[in-house]
Figure (tube, rainbow, N blue to C red):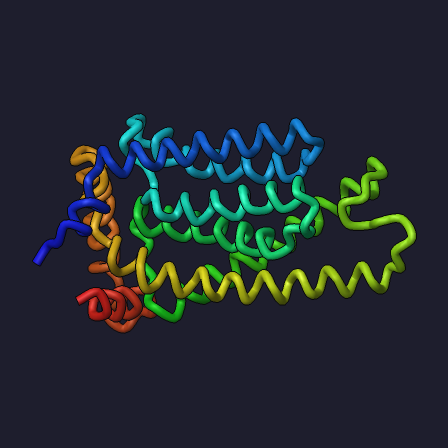
Length: 241
């Protein structure tokens, strides 16, 4: 039976309104970081905002937004790190790992909500973990590249032995992987199951996505019954039921 909470999270206009509010919040964080000289983190926050704007740009309607909850999970680590650095109470490392994992979570939720991609429980968690690790790797490469080309100190700090830098990078990968595992479980237990429906989307968008699903189902019907793709799709249906 549908509860008040179900109706709250599935209301398309309410979801879009909260999502746009959070996108604006992320853009403010991006501008704030740029203003205080944290250009790298300003760029990271801007990347989160751009990813959040992919659905409305694709479907040409402001109501086609990601679930507001996933944007909140991405926004709060960004804000937390900004305040931590400004207050001088730490490096914001924990917020960094959570923000990278949230970025992977946005990608996974987009694929699940706005494409015909379906993942079983194990693969859903693995996908978010691997995506988080990939994002952490790109993050390290970007910092290294800027330090090498422009003499910044995002990763290669003066006076710090290279072995210490390498160890810190490896620890970042470990912590990011743990954060990715947590994000993967959140994706599987909440977004893949509870928010699996598209009731928070406009009817025109939901209809277009259903047509894409039917086209994909037709493709699978033409595949041999024992093919890995058809078998995986059948397993995912069983889990959703």
